Length: 604
Image (tube, rainbow, N blue to C red; front, side, top):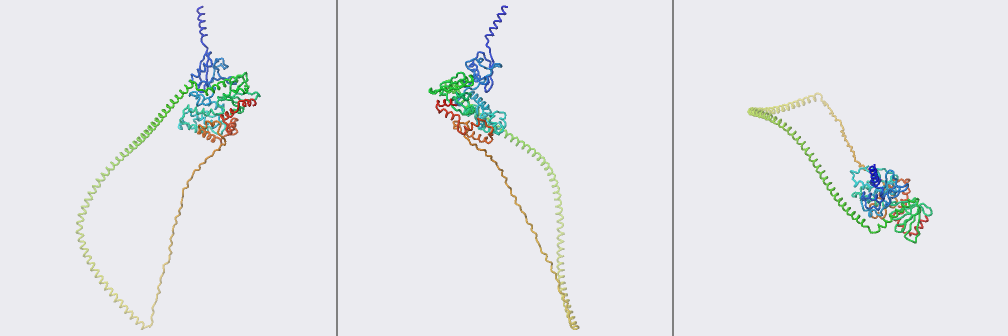
């Protein structure tokens, strides 16, 4: 019994020594992390664990956020995690987010992981419309987001529709224009194709460089009231404190840079700010809840510390990180150049392989053609052999016929010799016949002459007889009768000849060239200044970017539905027409004396 009691007491003691644990889910912009933590852990312990897991060294920008009723709060580093007012029914869930934003992302953000986390968070805030972004800048930012995700544009790989499932533009922009998803994708892709050669890190930095000049970038807004009870908005960011009209989150009415603020404090719901100029009265405002004042104070302290740190020499840790980052970038640049060379060599080898394959196919085709020609030649040879055999037989037959013809010629020659003697006899006979004929002809001619002479004599005799008869008649009748027979003649009828000439009809057909008419649709020119998204300072560094924004705005301006413009769209257009920007407005406001600004705040 005693031993059983002792063992039970030992187990109880061991159980008491074993620390209690709780499960924590950390939602980052990239993934969800799950940890099992000891109950005694403070916020610093959990925060350091998350940073080590992510490989993050620039920890001063980030914090662990959780929701409390209708507002948000940040985990305190020196307080136990379980002592915070966090829902714990199904485990603790915290969001790892950027709490403070840099003034210049390119210069201040050293690590690639830091840049990546900021890129993801800022992109989400733009898409969720927590940061106002003009339409033309939204398209350009979307193209950098696509470059960061997909790499260089490849027409063979990135075919129309490859962005159909991506959320790249705020819904406000999509609703503002009469444009189909295909039209938006076409414009995003046109910008995306120009970013060739940029790595993921470079594309994300370019995204942040553009986004940091947006009016609402990095500002935390809180509803406050001044002494008169006027509803106002307090904006806290990396540069200082700003007072806004609740209906206008883009342009502050008053600004106080951190270097002009000496002290910040709150008492219950009242918040007090003491200017550096001791002659200037403090100014106070009231927030809705004490919890809000605590959050404002946290943000003010953190932003003020970072503001002062930027204007001092970097700490050894930061210098070391920047050196390592430079070395890492140089190494990555060399690796990228090596990869580019290898890619070119591989492409060249693939081209040579394709050329060899083409030549091989050509040679195979030629060999096939030669084989077919050989088969045809063999068939032709067989046919020619057949013909040669027939020709040989025909030659034999012709030789036989030639021999027979030779024999016939010999026979004819023998016959001809015999006929020659007969011919001579015939010629002799013919000669004798000719002589006889000549004699007969001479005899005939002589007889003819004799006949003619007889005819002449007969005629003369008749004439003598006629003369005798005539004298006899004259003697008997003394009259003479001579009948006359008038000649009759007929003229041949005159048949006029006529000729018919046929006339050729010729038609000249000419080809008519049909020219295509090219219709160029001139898009409506927009009459406004530069959009507020891209400020003068950055435009001077990148004229090409300015031209891109101008071209984008011109392309889509004619498709805008004015009736769907939000109040922020209208305010942004008014600021653009006046030439106001985030930096210019801040500079104008800070040129006024602190005293006059405090007085103005009290009179709002």
